[in-house]
Length: 98
Image 1 (cartoon, rainbow, N blue to C red):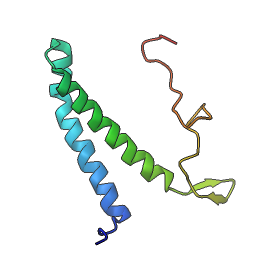
Image 2 (image 1 turned 180 degrees about the horizontal axis):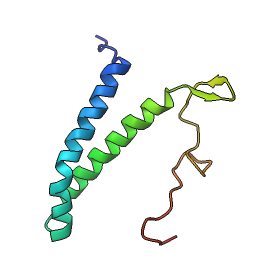
Image 3 (image 1 turned 90 degrees about the horizontal axis):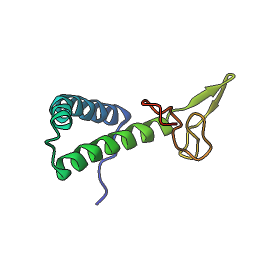
């Protein structure tokens, strides 16, 4: 009883739909943050939606071939993100807490 394989196009469309849904929900979330009116569950649910979307995008990216000096290198999940060797992103703190 195997499930139907998801095509690259189907995966892309699912990512785009979820990104649209999250974008639509963002205004209400921002208002809730500013008004300090979000419940614990509302905050966690929104965060988990973002995490799941990020995981889908990363999985898609890991399957995207990388071209370096004309050589195709297949992506894999062990590839580090910018500035790190442990697979975690290394982005500057937007509010300067570095």
